[in-house]
Amino acid sequence: CAGTVNGSAGVAFNPLPSAALSGGTAICAGGNTNLTVTLTGSGPWVCATSVGGVPGANLNIAASPFQWNVTPGTTTTYCITSVSDATVCSQSYNNTVCQTVTVNALPTASIAGNGSVCAGSSYNFPVSFTGTSPWTYTMTTPAGDQVVGPPAVTSPNNFAATVAGNYFVTTETDANGCTNTANSPTVTLTVNAAPTATIAGKGSICAGSTIK
Image 1 (spheres, rainbow, N blue to C red):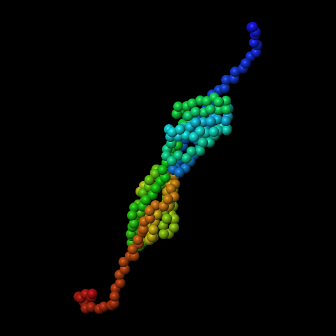
Image 2 (image 1 turned 90 degrees about the horizontal axis):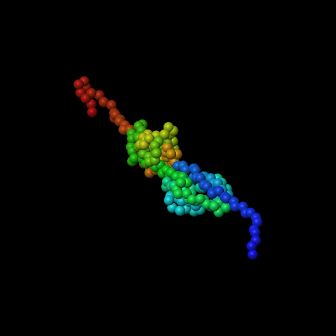
Image 3 (image 1 turned 120 degrees about the vertical axis):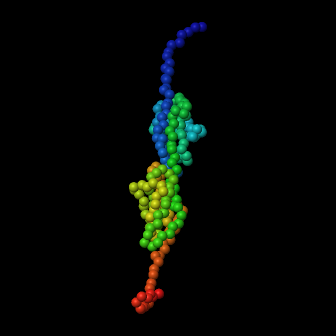
């Protein structure tokens, strides 16, 4: 038997979803930042990731744009390796949708050795720093905290001390805006009293003689 079939069918072509990544920046050690994931297609989306060249956790995203919060311990490159949307269409990327987050180490401070000075004079403690020049810092002294900078200083910086006691750096901030609140090793200033002289008694002598 033969017959005829009448009718029509529609085929919908869904565009491939796409992903873009932005927001790569520099942070201080121990900090975090947001990378912005911008998507096209029909939500929700699933994005496969790589972190430092190693496969990372998938991002399940309901709405675009999406903030991807990252906390790298060292400078790290983050990538979207593929994206799929609600239509089950997907697109893969070969390390082309990536951002790098640079991690700057916290600065440190150290003071070179103990010192001694005569009363009424000052002693220069050399303060050395790591990090990116220049720096500002706070020195704790027997007379209280003293902030050095702005203007910022270079390393080493001579801190003039006049009061006997202990000195240490409590905070230092470098040109990257990174601040360390760990105390530096402590140094001590000794202030020596000025010598004095006295003359005892009175005396009389004959002309041409001396008295002792």
